[in-house]
Length: 84
Image (cartoon, rainbow, N blue to C red; front, side, top):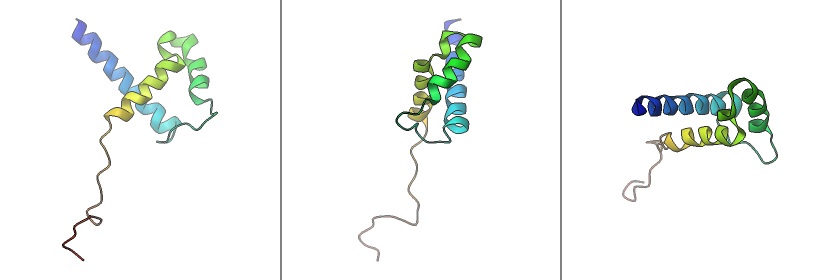
């Protein structure tokens, strides 16, 4: 049972974090002074509860950012000292 709950929470964090990151933040970090997460939280908490607090939304976005693969360097650009 606990494993099912953990899997569901991981899936929820991934889905919500990805949605915020891509659709709301457009794959960038919120700038200083932007009130994106507080505003979103204010809309979600009354309907879905404290699990969608500003702090939890930030954790969801950070969760996605930590698990995304690092960008791979282009094969056209490399630091091989033996090639011109």
